[in-house]
Image (cartoon, chains in turn brown, orange):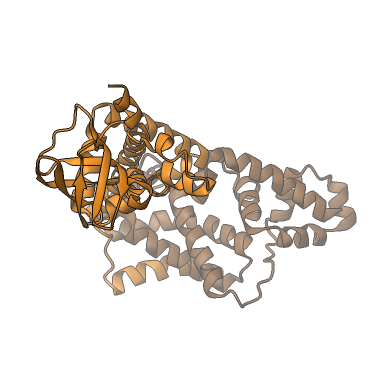
Length: 182
Length: 237
């Protein structure tokens, strides 16, 4: 199953829903991590969002165009699901999720060209709170670029904005983050 | 982690969920493209009529005596058509943006290309002579079209200022009966009128008159022009 492409798995899933398992397996961890970093929800909420995204993905499988990457497609659905979750729970207060194994803050810090010494000195707290204060559209591109390591065109396909805009969003996000860290 | 996989697959099985058929998405995507096409065509028609109304409007010459600047602008510029065309262009942009892959283009790119295509095709439609036909059809079948959309109607439906337009209903030797564009019937005395050579005084003919309204039913014409065409050019004939 490992060597089978996403597009092929989609084809097989359309014939038999059992073939959806490897696709879910392939993306669930990444999507869970993405959701947690994007909307700052707890593990349980993040799981609900990802589960709903996979169900929506299955229902809309016929709309998937193999011309584009499946990852961008499923991330887009997850993104929409997370946004609608936030809309439904706008009165709830969310806290930044902490993943001891792999920290988003290290990755973003390196993306920002922040020296390790700074992180050591000031701790991750500042960066965490700065990232939390960042506008969601800036946080999204930062997460997709520096945590998910995606290309501009993939990010464009997920956020449904022109790829040229991604570059400027990232630059502005970096400036804003650095300002917040001052 | 196993939880999510099992929960997803269980839900699919338990609720007997099936992927939505492909035709549903094809229909949805086609619908957006059709809406885009319709609004593009409407924008083209709008531009062609705007050019036609400007090209066939003797307003500039006729309203020069109107002292109020804004009133003059309203009589010269087909504002409703311009606003409507801008709306069609915006809706076409919105529809394109929501087609598959439409998000990849910037608003500037889509809008400028849309405006360029609309202008070029609008000019082609005007050159082909279809704009006049479309405008006539609209004024024939849509009540109030002439009085609200066609700037010429606004210019030529000011009998108190000596301008009148309408359809000839009956022709006598020196008099004719005219139903104006608002539906009122006038007796027109054209004894001393300069009837332009292209004007055929017959029933059903649409004409414009310059002269004086002596009562609210009688108009003494000094000039009779065809509905279409520039008055200034006509005077040179």
